[in-house]
Image (cartoon, rainbow, N blue to C red; front, side):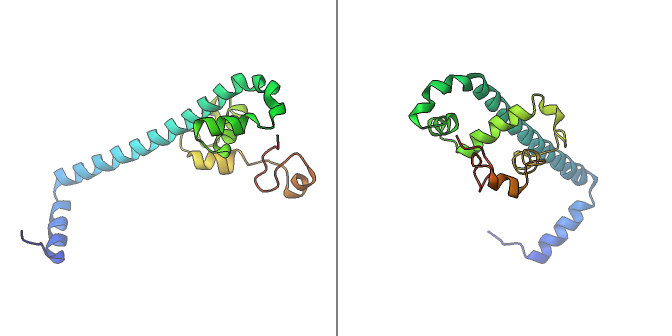
Amino acid sequence: MEIIKTDTTKEIRKELEQQEWYSSLTEDCDAIITETVFNSRWELIKGYHELGKRILLDLPKFEEYKAEGESAVQCIAKSTGKSQRTIYYAIKFARKYDDINQLPEGKNISWYKVCNQVLTENTDTTEEKESDENVCKSCGRPLE
């Protein structure tokens, strides 16, 4: 097997980039990748929204078990293998946005931005949080 030298590879790529069919190919590839990433991000957001809404349906049923010392978020997280933070954010997201099409950036957003910007904006100041004994000082989640 013959190894192509780097200079030769650059020359070949340069020649390819001048071909109309190659430009069309790479534009199509970029469009496919962009669309796929966009769709996967939006589907993830829709999934977490659906998760939060589903949990909210049965959340009142946890009241009788609260005496056991484990919150609904803790229980669901353990049973599903997801983190408590993920469950908490899914619930918070569903409460804040009944219609996910009302997100500030529309469909051009990621789950990371939802959790770290959208769901945390307009929250109490740190000073106010620290005075509230029912809120976790490190993450701002309500203590149950």
